[in-house]
Image (cartoon, rainbow, N blue to C red; front, side, top):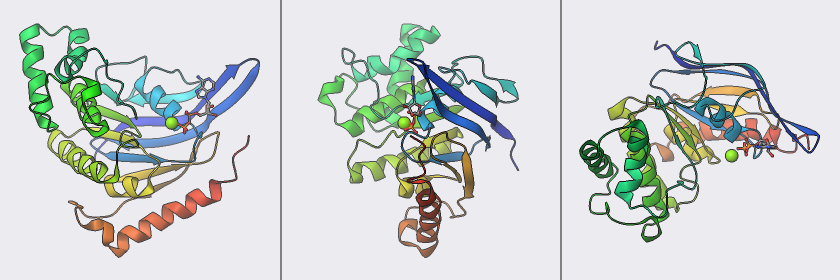
Length: 258
Ligand SMILES: Nc1ncnc2c1ncn2[C@@H]1O[C@H](COP(=O)(O)OP(=O)(O)O)[C@@H](O)[C@H]1O
Ligand SMILES: [Mg+2]
């Protein structure tokens, strides 16, 4: 069995605003294995984005421990790439210049940046759109550019926060399949937050189902479906796993302590 890549132990996070304390996460523990596709689902507001931000090093936990390769997370780093729902591209930059952005921060020279940007735009199927601006692209294409940008600095870990939530169903399935291909070829560890149980089951090796706020891992479900999964959605096993996660989530709806 492969080793643990990310270890979350008894993690908690509280936000303080206007004298009020909001507990976003409380006593959350789980492990992500190296090279694993790890899905996260949970009720809205249960702390999924907060969790990814903590793993990304852009938010500090209030308590507990979170380690990558056995070392406590100190801040952001090029070992982790984050992808958000809206893509977060710079509107005044072309696709290519958006991909180059991370490489500029990393200090790569212009020739190298251009070469790497071309390579990753091609990898995500955007050859010919190097000079397009974000407003000229569909949401699916914006997410492809965002993915190329993250991949361009070759992180070990991809942290994805509902990255395909804003694209139509057909585009979404295409993006899911391409992500699986990239994951297989490039051997990344992926932590993938989604609202869609279908998407989580289709993609993941295991899925953590979080409780209503404050989030803790209610259950980690092993997705035993064989890969490749191209035609798996119509199978009985797929339906069974989806129902299992739906049932765990149903117990949580209405359980939200507002
Ligand atoms: N910066 C912040 N300040 C105060 N409260 C926050 C902040 N970020 C998130 N929260 C609160 O923490 C809880 C979890 O939020 P979030 O992680 O965005 O949940 P999810 O992504 O699962 O929908 C919510 O109640 C939210 O309002
Ligand atoms: Mg969120």
